[in-house]
Length: 90
Image (cartoon, rainbow, N blue to C red):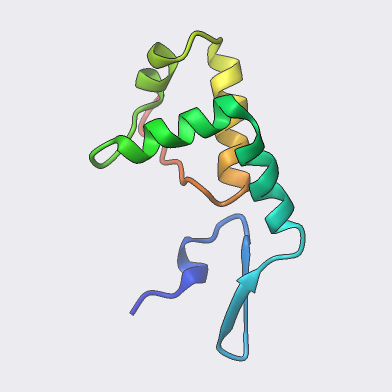
C-alpha cells in the first residue's frame, strides 16, 4: 500500500486521523494552474504521453521559449498536478 505523502514532495495534501485533505491554499494553486490556457494545454499533452513526457518534446510542441515552458511546468508541479524527474541535463 502506498501512502499519498510518499509522492507529495510539495506538501499538497495533509493526512490527519486517516483522512487526506488538500493543504491550505492548494485548491487555489490548482485553480490558478488550470486557469491559464497554455498550462491547461501542457497538462493535456503530458497526460496523453504513454509514460513520460520529455521537456524537449514540450518545447517543440509549443511556440514559446524554454523559460516559459519551465515556468508553466513549475506551476503545474506546485499545484500537485505533475511530477518532474531529472535525468542528466534533462
